[in-house]
Image (cartoon, rainbow, N blue to C red; front, side):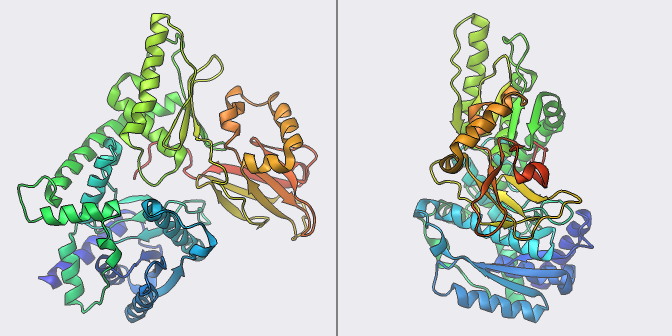
Length: 490
């Protein structure tokens, strides 16, 4: 039976690779050492050939035995003929988060390292070992977080790799989850039949982490056909939510094309307000469509790797609905912004519609980047891609470097210049682009012409600074990591 399951899995993965047009691409396998990812490596090596694969193991360094396990994964990859890399996270370089946020931060850093490997080898797709149990777990996790239809539709087969820089073809690498139709028992049986050693992470039993607690609930319910928490029951509801989402999304993309303005260079979205100011705009007139429109916009702005919670969307909806009710009744309307889910929503004025921008960061939340060479691309704040390079035909010394600051950090160095540059920008920029809430979350770029020189202000508030090196010799580009497509697939 295990041999049949393995053969079926190989064919299944081959079909997915061909359907996604990845047959001529080199694939990166995320292999932690657990049974699911070890089975993935075995299956992928037979589906596409070991020479078309690279494997990466991210060692979080939380357990004494993790380095030994990563080395053991490397030996098995060598046996399969797959090139293997180990990336170890160094927690002494960053402030270790409290246990409540440890999973989230470790996940972000893991994806960042995987993205770095993609950059090194110019890989465009990362295969993971997510299986049907993970899908059920994700559904339940999002359910208790009060996610809407977007979140409850679960993980998709393919999605953008979070926190990753684009490859040479200017496309962001994707995550592909080819084993979502297989359960954990099948992957265990494939490992056992193939003599594949795997490791059980003891921290997966630590119920201080919410995902582990949910995993335990699902595991205990899986033998009870009547339980609403077994995998089969959860996946049936997830599939229904996916169907609802697909129906809504068919019309949502064209609706947002007409009513949303995406400023990819600022990380800002503007949703149209009705001209008479009394009727709900078309994107907001249907509650289900309104929820999905807001989920799409909020998810695009905050760039988190999970959909926004329903409770957060309700805060935005409440202001939108009450705004138009008050307008219709002729009552006074508070112009107070709403900030939640990492996003600030600004009510419409005569100058702009509903504005959505990144919520103002906490003190020291965004770190100043290290010195970067000309031609390098930086992913700033997890949402904006910034590149500084010489203009065509300009000869710039190789010693020139650049950095990116948050507005708060930059104000400590160039307060007078920033205030003057902002005054100049107000004459030429759209009023919506110059709103204080928008300006507060924009990157400030400095350039250092030689190693021992003081950095000079080069770019702020979406434009280069006059009389700077950037004004004459440098091209500075800023764009959203998620492009301009608001209706993303998670």
